[in-house]
Length: 105
Length: 131
Figure: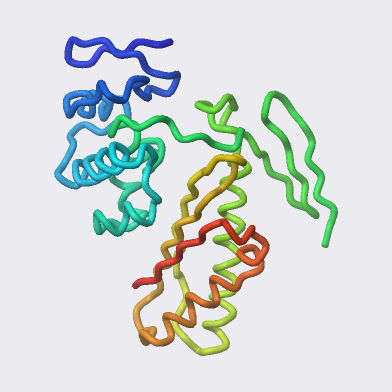
């Protein structure tokens, strides 16, 4: 399992950089993971998305529907892709410490 | 109707031939592919968006509504048991000038497209329309 070092701490991640133990998540980890996604600075709008995802996941143990994320943050789908270039599932969920979503195979 | 042929190339990468069109389908590098083309679920989502677009264009042309250059943004979410597309999120952006009551009709045109009708009834397709 790959190891990523963020702010002097080491974390196990999968091959795509999703942290394995989501209970290890912290805002510092999100800032560190942001750089791996090419996001230099996390704005209030990034945090709005990250904190909503984090809160929903802690309550329901799954990621919220994308439409719910759009409604709760007030951001259109396209804007969420502007904030997180790899999208709500891969980019925003990674920074929020959620498990990696699965694809076709 | 026409014959569609899929030819395996290497790994997950395949070539699809449809009439006189050929394109590559692959998985992204982070899913074990080489990212030589869109993945099947992206094509499914693009098929839905394209079909919705054609039905919107047909309705708007008939109703004489401004529609040139409208855009549709889509994303999908995977659900489990069985592994499938559980929901599709669709944001339609129309040019200004469509009365509110006609926006509902545009949304209905999108939701009655053939690809949408072909999806399982438990696949959520959530459409929002704006300018």
